[in-house]
Amino acid sequence: MSDIIMHCYDASPFTQRALRMLAIKGLEWRWVETPMAPPKDDLVAMTGGYRGTPVMQIGADVYIDSQMIAAELEHRYPETTLFPAGDEGLAMLLVQWADTFFIHAMSPIARLLLNQYPEDFQKDRAHVFSRWGIDALEGRYEAACAQLRAQGDLLNRQLMDGRLFLTGDRPGMADIQAFSVPWIMRAGLPELASSLWQGLDMLPPWEARMAELGEGTRIPIPVAEAFAEARSATSTCVEGVESNDPENLAVGQSVTVSSLDTRRGSISGRLVAARRNRVSVAHSHESVGDVVVHLPRLNYQVIPG
Image (cartoon, rainbow, N blue to C red):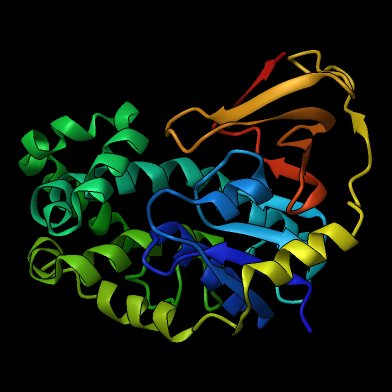
């Protein structure tokens, strides 16, 4: 049985990024379904406070954010790479571009789609994305639609030479980063998506190829199984801080880590390791025992104390 346990829900575009990673690598994985909105007590027990998805668990190691999941999957399962063009740095830089792409999609979602969800879900998303000004997104609808069309045009241009995927004939992280926005727009606002991307003829076939990748092999499990696995395992994280760390972090100090651009909760605990683009924090909870939570440095802040 697979060591990988994903804590997520399918409607999240960020979850969809992780699913395409698992598909490219042809992996079997176990699935704990998380709710779309709080309370998310089981997920928070595992992460130490972070309530966003997807979250990947392998034994007593917990990986936050799709960019961290990508890095760990590539490390553990390198056979089918997520970087077929040998462009790992460039592909991971697209994290920030993909998030900007998603911000533009939030405006039509806020105007046309969000009000179809329960009020508690709407309030939660307004809180999560408050730094993006979700309350004002509706007023930027036309400008956001223009940005979505411009972004789609760039993707279309990249594909105009006949390549199957953005960096060549094999799918990779560049495709994964880009695909999540067309995915949510086509699913939630199909007429608007068709209108915005009318004439961009390379997009629909590329989107179909991305969807056809699937998700690997999913095995649903109860959260109790994930908890038991965490309690019975020991983290494989190696303690240490790289020299010349810009924040002068030290193993053993108390830290709090949170996202710079969304309010998905923070993680507090003992620093175990800090690398150029990874910070690892020890966390304990009666449900999961002792685990180590790994987060990116990119787009996350580490606050001592």
